Image 1 (spheres, rainbow, N blue to C red):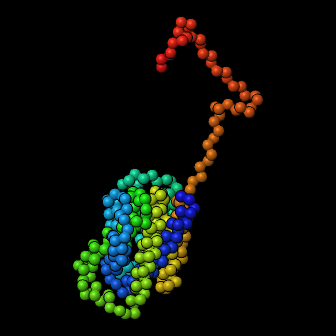
Image 2: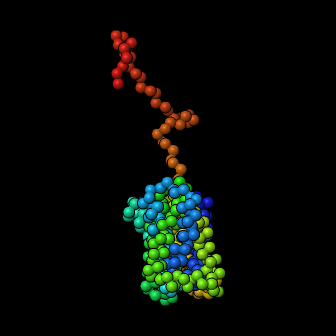
Image 3: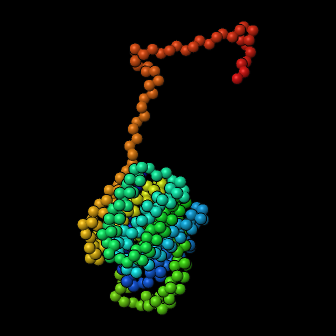
Length: 326
């Protein structure tokens, strides 16, 4: 993976890390299922009207939309609304990285190098340390909801990687067509029409909520997911996915600065392990130059004897003019 592609992956991690602050602001005004439906509906409508459908198998488009779009944000928004702190949610969602490698290796038989295994193990250890240090801030049920969102993200990762879209941005846009209808149906059934109507009543939280929604649409979905899909189309899922482990580092830092969430020594230690594991797992292995062929004669060595070719026996005179068969 070249350095320019690694920098792109890091930039996506920054976009997605700040995305949790935007989600927190939007959840102050809108219920979670409705917010997820709004997030993708504002992209889906112009996409259907203006953007041609990507030339990829329908099963991978649906897998990307259901995994990355529907399941991830269904459980993420639900978990955050149920009480998972913003920084902790950014951490737990990165369980998508080991889930992606696991799905790629078991379902699609993708090769996982020893370097990737070591790097992913170190980063996962870092996530475990950070999660342990903040586990008291969230109930076990909401924690499992966000963990399920990470598994949904992994399904989207492997689906987008298998799609091999010639235009990744078109795939990202059309992925947004899948979530709105099921999310709106869940909102009507679970949250109810009254809660939906109340969420559109203007109030002090409406402005930040709309700004947060705009960020998640323009930066989190279009820019971040577009670059991520572009990387997934060019590299194995197990190489790109570990970079998502940098997201909680940004999310935890931004939550501490903007929302006042505390970062302890163990959290900082775990974040350092995450960074080290990602960098090690994504580092390219230097291939030594091929050794010279010792059997080949050196034309410049005066002391090396070159064997003379074996003389070909002459054909009998009676057959010298006749063609030979092979």
